[in-house]
Image (cartoon, rainbow, N blue to C red; front, top):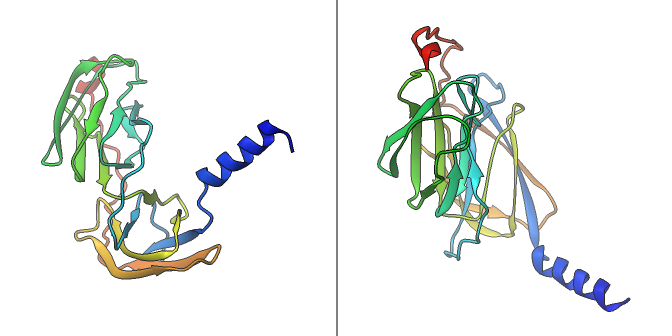
Length: 211
């Protein structure tokens, strides 16, 4: 093994913890249907330093925020590009982060630093139908569920608090004494009985086409 390969091998060992396990969650509603956009987080029983993270992105396309739900760590910068041909005016009045990006398009808006934990609800001051959510978390281990209601979290085996949030879940679902084993994959199905999803509607906003 030459020196280059040895350095690469050692760096890989450092980058990927030897005892990392994988938790697969399947999130369902009270009718046993899969639920997307669920944020699940494993909060260690013993607090640990948060790893650095690259900037995240919340785009705007066809008068919608994409993604609808974004999960990030505390002290993450989020960019808000506007990929539409019309201008948007992004804002939030949430206690975790109050900010305003006045009418713009393209990538001219400055990124926003989310430096407090909590839920941040986004809106557009021009297009009322535009709503999105940013969950700012104090842990290195989290994920957002897909269309099949599935998500995967990689973390070292140990004791955690399992926290689950969703825009239409009135209270956080929590398991204070969740144990992640050292098995390669631990799977759990969770039914969110208190979740109430709204009817799918697409409001017409003729005035917004002027901006």
